[in-house]
Length: 495
Picture 1 (cartoon, rainbow, N blue to C red):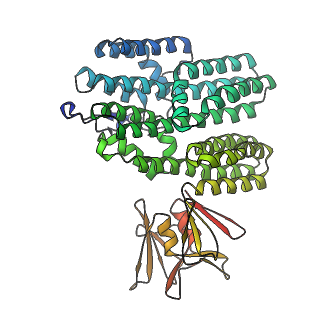
Picture 2 (picture 1 turned 60 degrees about the horizontal axis):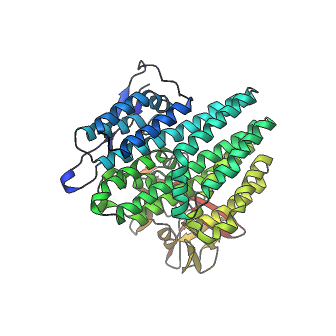
Picture 3 (picture 1 turned 90 degrees about the horizontal axis):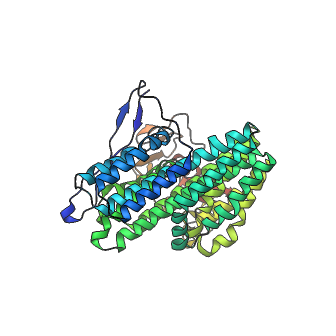
């Protein structure tokens, strides 16, 4: 099977101080490609080499020398991590090497090159931490080797401290988060306790939580870079764009798995290389939606694992859910203080196999998330809360025959859909993110971009009542990639 790798293509007009246009070029690697490089877990020499590269930049060493040093110290090591990255996701070597080659050719500024190498290696060290905690510590503890497991955790601490913590503290300072404290004062001691107790399940929970916490960090670092792009002088914008690009590439694949259209929106902004295409509010909203989508997805996954009796798996996924809900911290503002208790509660409920508690906590998480991006309302009320702000609307109602909630088209517009109604065909069309759903009065078929949705029939058709068109909310929400929560007549719709 061919493997798709992603590389960075850059088109730059230095004289105009336009940063870069980034596009992924697909390179096919056949099945008989060279054998995968191993992941190098001997971290001390790598951290020394990383600091040496930073020092070379500080000393303004020639880019050609820096390129030569990068290739000597990291090219093979980075390949080991690149080979572990999911097929189709961006890889590190091709991106960093492309920047270095163009910098040597004089097509990129020194500052752009410095950002690419530094943030590209932070991307590498983040994935190295994933390997150290999963294949390393978890694998060793599963085999009963507590000494080896602790060695891998010690290496994790060393990598985090030397290569990642400065970025964590910068995002803490910018956004008022407390991530550095969580990692150093909670997670690292927890790993040690897990190993002492030989508790593989708990170590896996904390491993997942560390991983998702670092996704939060790099997403916030991306947002910080987007803010810089809008605020810094024209001469500094190219470096800010490439800085944000490399931060984002480390987590792009994960966020895209939650909400592809919004993840792509952020990617395209940085990939354009054009500061004029940056809209900080749109990028912020997209990152929020990606995280909210992950909260919804992992709530569902915890419940699915519990239904199958996989309590250990549910516990690990609970750690992932904790991490993505905590990623909403800077956006929830003061309300996060009251919402924060839900993170510990979801860990406990998941680990205990308590599906009812998970559902209740997931609903509460969704309610908080909707105050940032989403809608919530009581069926029959004349108000809908749109991202926490009340708006007056025509009331929704529950169709007694089907038990389904029907809403006027305005509700879908509040969720960002474009809604049209064709009087001739009696068809309502709702469009968002390039997807159009068409529902016809009297029909149980839904067309998605003109084609019937396979194996799906509406159990609640479109209704026209008092000249108002009402649509089945759950069907549209779920078919369009949104998530709907219902409890005692209260409805929440989020990504």
